[in-house]
Image (cartoon, rainbow, N blue to C red):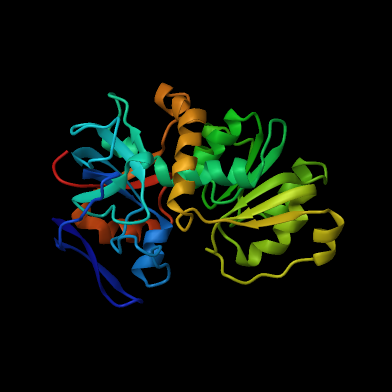
Length: 328
């Protein structure tokens, strides 16, 4: 089969579509012919040597995919060759085929394209886990979502709205702010032109927000802590703004805040299966009905993965950037 192979060096990785050994699958897995995958920040980090896959996972990039089941393992029930599916992956999506545990599969609605399917698992699961399982967001609360126009951000806005929470976001352009407002953000802050802390405190009459979902980290830490109300929660899911930050410990203690560090990729397979089951019961029906929708910015052929990575690195996207595999 063919897959994306990372060449070059850590400063200048080169993504090449070339032949690699065929993937093997186990008795509880299915082999899927990949029709689409997607670009995530983790892929950019891995290509630069900064984010190794979990032990035993494929070293090929790609944390989600949509495709058609080609072969079913002998212990798999409920799935058959020809089923259209999507799934979260620990790696291996940038390829013609991938092995997937049956418990990780979601069946694509007939009217959905493969691009729509692959735009769901990584970012929607990330938003779901960190808003509700880690952040314990509930109806009537207010959440601040940094990078609101990202894949995770556009999913989180919709999920928080569906949970009857009030949504504030930050983003870096007027186009992105407008897109987030259309998805349901009540307050949209241009972090390049405005101080998000000041805007949040004004909007909440100096009370602050209940929850912050933050992929930035670094220099945002102190302002995040100041932007939280008593008993607030900060869930950090990335370090786009750096890995070190300072904060007022007195506020952390006095307001009885909680700071949670969270990743999805490194969780054990059994936990990911459970997350898939919970999401399938709770929010997958709303996506299937069209009440919620995956947001797709653009699609590149898999052979242009390098160009797609550069596009995401330049923060041009609103929602997901898709890679199509083979003829569509």
